[in-house]
Image (cartoon, rainbow, N blue to C red):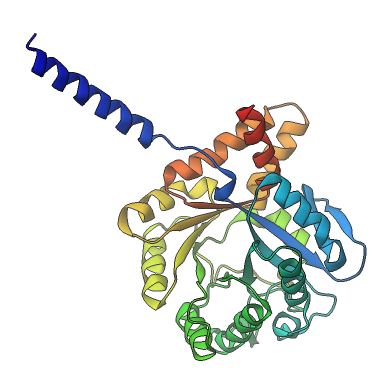
Length: 328
């Protein structure tokens, strides 16, 4: 074989191999966002019955949480508040001295580098469990936007690095963007729960957050699991309104939506590895039906492979530990 031709062939093969290696996906602790449930009271670190290995935290115990996050090298959290007082307008959600607002300030005091995302919704704060203001037992979209703007603003004033509206009201991204911009927070990003399905996988979360609807359901403002076209339309609409990151929720049963979104948009995609997905793997592992570690990591890796850049997961701390073990 001609020497120059041989060298050219070797170079081409090497390029193909490099391309193959680079096309493989891997997990990193930087991929993970850890969901944290904040409760009223003192000296509380209480395991959540429906989410084994995850806890309700009172503000005064957050130093212990920060230590765990730093040891695991998990750099981001998303906060959910569970107030003692609930009413028809979810007033504790936008109280500047509310449970989430106090938690943000405490976490920033403990670790200024921790990246704090806040869930912007009303279901944990209303006495009816729906995600907005009711008119004749139906959620009033336009009235709800005003409250969502107040909630997002109160979170950012407390020190949140990003807000994540999960309510699925039409026009909420544009409204919140306008509120933040008018108040000098133009650089605060918005992560939209753009493709949030009306899913049966949310059960353990609703128990953990005390957010199950007291009547009816959320099918009127969450998406039909049978519908894929609407997801892309919702994603594009939220991006046009000013969303910086879009989310697909749940993750595991909706990886087709993640893949399609990756192919059609340029914005970063986050997925929510929701409570039901976590609980299935956790409980099956505990009774010996599966290897929990291998199944959990495979599940998370599939989300990266489909196109997710970020993964909200109750496995964040455990997965970080497992990844560290595999490095040794």
